Length: 124
Image (tube, rainbow, N blue to C red):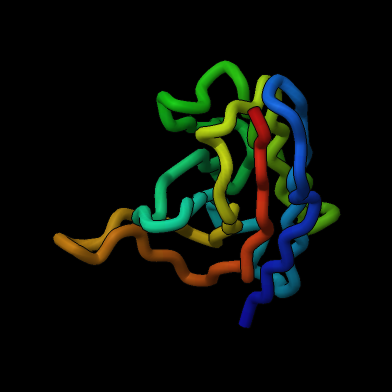
């Protein structure tokens, strides 16, 4: 069993920055790919970024590329999402996920574990 706990969300003005953290319990963290997703009101859950178990290879959605950075420290069982140059359209609940992967038609994204989410609100 793995528990994921996100923190670091809040209210920020457009152009500002936030750093989200996801603390994981369980011994499988260091062997798990980790990801960040977000869901805005009335919209489906959206992929933001993922990072391989080694932390060497990050991937980003086009909408956040160049502004967000995903990183991890396996010794601390933690993955971060540094968000810079925030825009109002980045407003959403952000979720951390372990071993995320695309689901089938109409399934959206699947993961071994999801966090409870942290709210990010960007004002214009």
